[in-house]
Length: 216
Image (tube, rainbow, N blue to C red; front, side, top):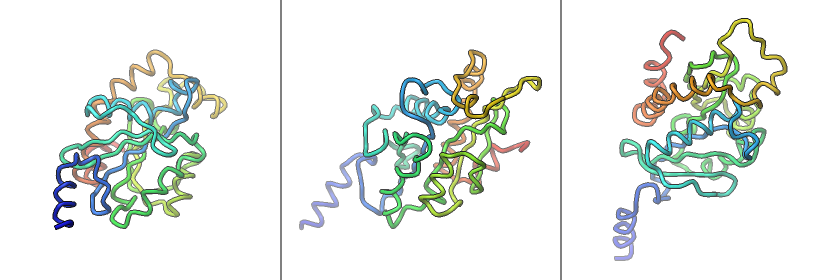
């Protein structure tokens, strides 16, 4: 009787509140730094994407959960959690520790990291199923905690479109704010990013790559 009651109560809870190991949860992790001084910087484009997704998906308000801000709901019937690490970029992987203890959760199929990519032109995206960190400290931290390079990532291009413009010091560039026209380009890309993330959630990384990496 107790077992039947527990199962009934679990069924009645919203999908984003269920915490059983059997529940498949897609984790969309946006890389960035906490603090108002970083809010509009290129390095925080991952957070910008998650804020957009939380809004269009009508997810509840962000709440502090351990070392991250999270917001949860369902996307196409799939339990989905948005995660913004509060650890600063170099320690981003720490927020994955609770997920690694879930026997039915695997980063290779259930995690998508949204990250800025200085090697990609502004206004473009690329999905990858695995690969190196490419010098990105946030990805290095994730790789360190996963002990694997096998996790999907969505790279958002931040490279200037003007060929004559030089990036200069990389740290200063990524920690600098988007210009007005640059931010407009990012905003115009958001519906495509949403479609790519929703495809990952519903059909997996390989389908998303085939659909959105055209011309890569």
